[in-house]
Image (tube, rainbow, N blue to C red; front, side):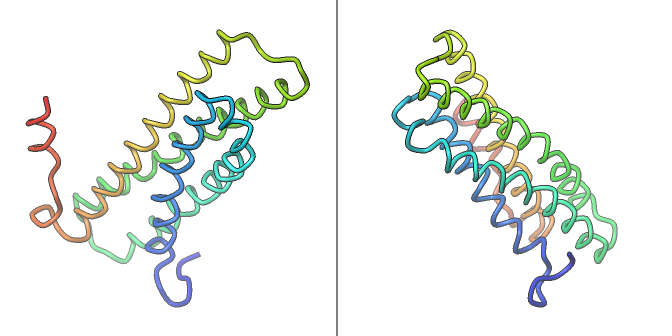
Length: 164
C-alpha cells in the first residue's frame, strides 16, 4: 500500500502506531498491576495490542516504500533502521497482553496463578511497555529529524543532561 486517498500511506499510518503503542503499553501496565483494571480492560488491551501488531509492520513497509522517493540521507537511514526494529518492541506487548488475558481467565474460573508469577508477569509488562514507548519516541524523533532537519527538530540531549 503506497497511498491512502492520494496521501503517502506511511504518513497516515504512523499516527496510529504513535498513539496505539503508548496507549496499549499504558493499559497493559495498568492491567498487570491492578486486578480491577485487568478485569475491566484486558479485552480492550488485547484487541489494541493485536491491532498494533498488525499495523506496525504495515507502517514499516509503507515507510520503506515512501523512503524510495527520496535520495540517500543519513537521517532517513537512521529513521528507517530504527523503524524497522519497532515490530520487535510490539511483539512482546502482544505476547504479554495475551499472558495477562490468561491470568484474567484463570482468575474468573477460580484457578488463579501464584502471586509470584503474576508479579513477575507485571514486571515483564512494565519493562516491555516502557521499552516500546521509548522506542516509538526514538523512531518518531528520528523521523522528525529526517523530515525537518536536525537543526529544527528538538534535541532532548540537553534536557536529559540537565536531569542527570
